[in-house]
Length: 84
Image 1: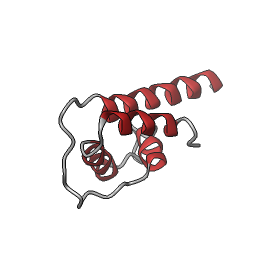
Image 2: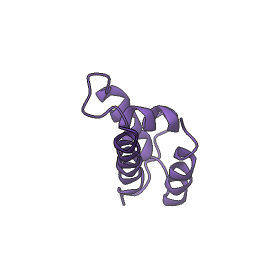
Image 3: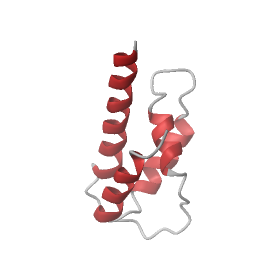
Image 4: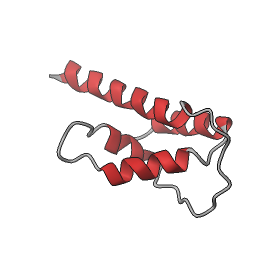
């Protein structure tokens, strides 16, 4: 069971990284998009496929990621590894 939880955690981080870095779009200049918090995004991604997953938080995370530059996205992924 411990290995399964570790696998799910790693998969969730990968999904988050894909969403955060995967977009090659030019960053949006919209300042109305607020940061939902990297740990909120990671923790929600870890709940994917469960009743506790929030589509709303997921959308906010995706929209915020679209406003970031590539280097900001990479820094955000590094921050994600410090979330519990």
